[in-house]
Image (cartoon, helix red, strand yellow):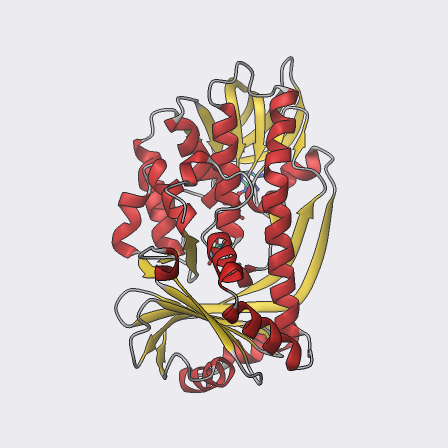
Length: 400
Ligand SMILES: Cc1cc2nc3c(=O)[nH]c(=O)nc-3n(C[C@H](O)[C@H](O)[C@H](O)COP(=O)(O)OP(=O)(O)OC[C@H]3O[C@@H](n4cnc5c(N)ncnc54)[C@H](O)[C@@H]3O)c2cc1C
């Protein structure tokens, strides 16, 4: 059996684990990044999501060298319109209110994956294991010993710090004995691209309906990313609709603020669960991204939040004598707590506001109040752009 050593072992090379490896690389810290999936070239292209990236996220991706590889695919979000079906009033938050050109950007998830991949290929301090699965964790003299199954056989990897970036069903979380709380929203989100009859002009639309939220994210050219929430027992029927019936169904839910939807590309259904880890750290171990918290995608927050986990952790480890130092990990967890709790509260409230058959007056009042109060609008703008609590330095710029 092969025996190796790493300062930091990252289990899971998804969007967050890959970003963390790149942030550590920039900080001069080496890591081993272990990913169960095969190399991208061998993987089927089955990703139809489009991700809304907050302004702070674009800053963070720039700091780790990914943004220049992605910017050509990114469409600026210049405003966000939130409305509720059957209720009077909507709120429209605009970037120029904060003196900025964009609140964030929309990118195809596939393009973000490809940009991370390209950056990883150029990183000199990231050792990758692909088609490699961590199947066990035990104590090492200092840190943890990971049992990694690869195509070439089994490897024993000793790591001074173990990072679980292995997603909602995190095996690292379970192997460390950290509990979790799950909530099934009994919904799936159906995602895919559509063409629009008139340009969205950089406006993202979010519509709350009794059947759940619907969103339309501006993409380049005349395309947009459609996100349609559907009750679990209706997903198969909506997925089976032909293109014109699907467009009619989406249009009825979305309304006409954004104009007519003309054509739909392949769609994909994602079941939605919230998963909250009971703790962010264990001795010489940290959970980041979806392994730490999987939130409802309605507020487009999951990767934005996970990237702030990754950037904050990399910042904490920069110039640390021991990456597993208990004080350092406790400080990391305390620093991430307010951001995590704020996003959880916000996404759960939005998801519930959208699904519950609330009296129309409540959401109407909420939207009118937001629309009428400049300080509240400014707070929401800053919040939506990803600047909360104690943001990682890499996400900052001159704050509005
Ligand atoms: C429909 C939808 C729309 C979304 N829209 C947005 C949006 O607009 N904006 C936004 O910010 N977020 C959005 N999100 C959320 C975002 O996609 C996730 O938060 C983010 O992708 C989580 O990344 P991750 O790396 O933490 O986890 P994952 O992407 O789940 O990656 C985990 C990785 O770990 C690997 N792995 C698991 N177990 C092991 C093991 N034992 N050994 C080795 N490897 C292992 C897996 O193969 C996987 O690659 C959306 C989510 C959904 C479902």
